[in-house]
Amino acid sequence: MKFNLETILFIIFGVAAVFTAIMMITRRSPITSAIYLIINFCMVSGIYLLLKAQFIAIIQILVYMGAIMVLFLFVIMLLNLKEERKISENFSYTKISAVLFSVALLGLLSMTFYFSFENKYNELNLNAENLGKAEFLGKELFTTYSFPVIITGILLTAAIVGAVVLAKKKFE
Image (cartoon, rainbow, N blue to C red; front, side):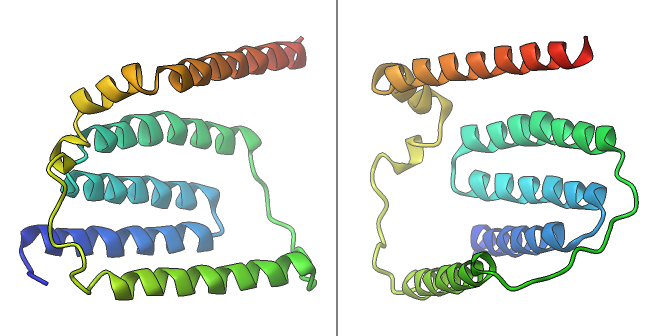
């Protein structure tokens, strides 16, 4: 494995993304968790840039950091969270299955990490560099995948209309 600038940046962004994800789920304050989530989105966007997926990196910044995090922070501020109550911990099948799935996921990730260093795939596909560009993505979305894009747009529009109707009934 060659250690050039891209590899070093990839390792830094990856470690920082994992660290901020762990910090996000272990913090008590929802505001602190939201800030760690914003930093995580930045790190993931940097990984996308290193993988030459410029369009997805920009969408990561615009959509997730711009829109969704503003919405999260708005909801957190709207809830006006008070002092947290202590929740009693009981063992249940849900928690046991969550632990088992976590162990399985850790095993799968470790196997993926182990087999990624075997130099199995030394060459990239000739079309791999164009896959992350906006032109290629737009062409694929509006030719090959036009029907799912239209259906997704209709579903999102219906969801927005439903949210507005429910919010209007709540405030009346």
